[in-house]
Image 1 (tube, rainbow, N blue to C red):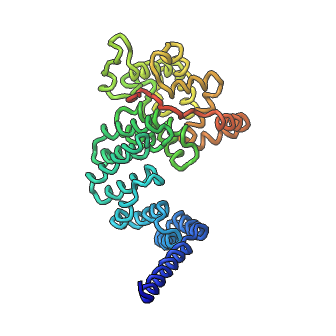
Image 2 (cartoon, rainbow, N blue to C red):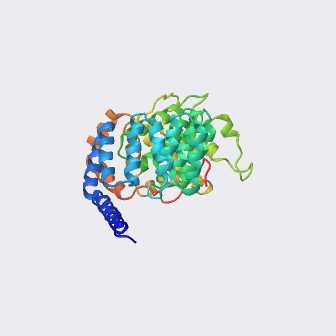
Length: 368
């Protein structure tokens, strides 16, 4: 090897080492984390363009760091730049550091582009990788809901509650969607499950009010023609899987509710709208009747079982006041002023002894 060739090889080696040192010097996790913090603050303030600039700075300090790329893609969707987000996500959406969120975001981008076949393919890929993903079940259901196929949407969301019992969005949309049908029995129960799971958000107030309105919609106490109306005729006519001799859950529910209503409301009077206090008394009487008839053991319903347990512990009425609190805020405020100490004690207890969502729950609709 000539001296000239040796010198060229040395120069090349030094250049390579310097290049590697420069690349290493550019990776600065601490500074990148500072920029990421700024980006998240911009996102919280709904300033996606500023956030994108901050994510670019973070990525300059931590090139190819997948979580930063994902968050930048989120910002791109906030600015409706879905094609750019798709281009950014496509190489990384299966990365295990993103878990099911990578599939969800990429699929949602395709949905925004009205490319349903691509989004559905991505969601199904995600479900194959993460079969217990509540958010991917939700997205599949949402596709069918948008396509006006409410039945299939309900099936996907119900599976989502079973696959991931702690993911609240599936309960929320089951309640919202069933509320638009005649089978509001399911809407009320999923709304109540949602409220037990997500207690202190804007959606909590919405669901509390919806729950109260749905119960009032179903009840016209004293009306001789149609006093109890929680279910469609089609649902009431469906036989129990165990045979004709077993009263189905929807029929049993309406029958016991009618008995309870006859006890707690004045005779020969039509009550078209119940107060919270009347609703609480009705639910309390219904729970007692449900137990007395042995229906708590005949029909599996984890929500009603929870109500029974609350009644046994002397907490049911306070729980029901909490449940319907946003149905009539004036009435609720009067109750709170009158029962402040007792109700505060209940809230402390409830915070430590709430309904358990560690396993799939059954309320009578497509139970596991």
